[in-house]
Length: 146
Image (cartoon, rainbow, N blue to C red; front, side, top):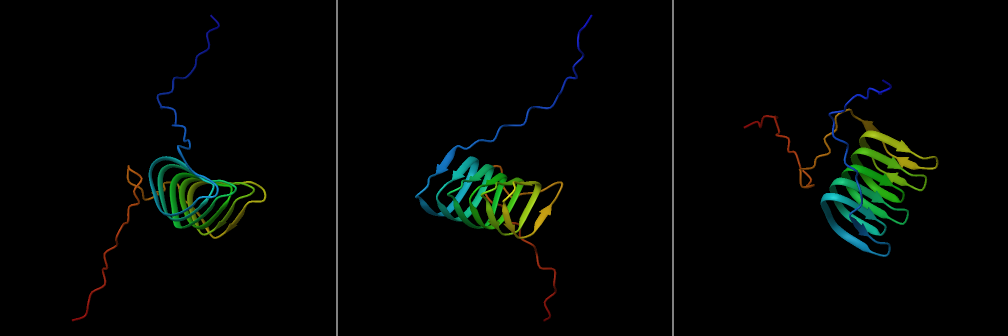
């Protein structure tokens, strides 16, 4: 009699992204981070990041990377380089020097960004299913004079 009609949702709940690996404070790392899962960087990292998941740059974290690629990126520390992500959040202590390409973008008061923000509805972050960065080559259509 007083039964509430609730609409049934056929969509599966979105997976919760979480940190599965940590680069601790006091650690300096140069190289490549790729794969699935989540990583929190509290130390200093220089190289390439391509993660199918979450990247968190903690307050003590410093990242120098040509382009960080991940599903979600949270910056509370410093990032020198571009960011391509579905979701980007720059916290009040976060500093980003580089261009960002995102689907969703948020900042807290006090956050810093020096660069351009490009927002797109459907963004390809350039990662394979394993988190490997995919490089797309463009063929040169210019004719060579003989």
